[in-house]
Length: 242
Image (cartoon, rainbow, N blue to C red; front, side, top):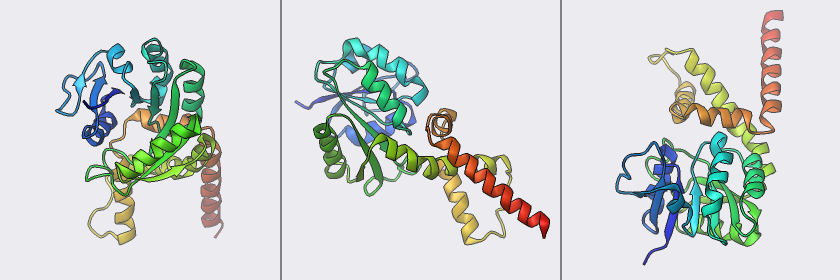
């Protein structure tokens, strides 16, 4: 009999998660907005999903604290809870503060999404962060590497967010600005412009909640944005003075 895995959240990323974990687990998913498990999961109530040995939280970062409060009473004493949020410092602090003491916690951030992972996730990257117990973080990292073929980076939540403030924060910010400038040229384009458009398309359909999490909930993002706009102003000033 296969182990059951509870999946809280069955949106775009929840479905991607289920697609790649359903081969090894019986997935019990809870999402009030979902009406079909799409052959990947059995939809169920919150209490049943939260009572599984392993529980994956695929909810927006802004909904995480309420979710933690809701699942807390239903978790097994030694359940393993894993989040997949785009930022790590605040979720790690919230999980440690709000989940029962015996619950094991690992933070993860798959460095891909439904669009970039649509053709498979082998070879893509994931960050794994220790929250409660180094052993559990190592086990999750090993599973991601061996079973899913992911390239794993074990980092602290702080180091993750510090790098993600640039890697994700600037990518999503620039994409948001360029999408606001559409329609953009499509005929006489250069290879570098085409690459830029490909990068935009990878995040084009991300939910507004993802953008807010990356820009607002990362404690290092504001500093990166400020530096970016200051340097942009310098570049603008240099053009104006010449």
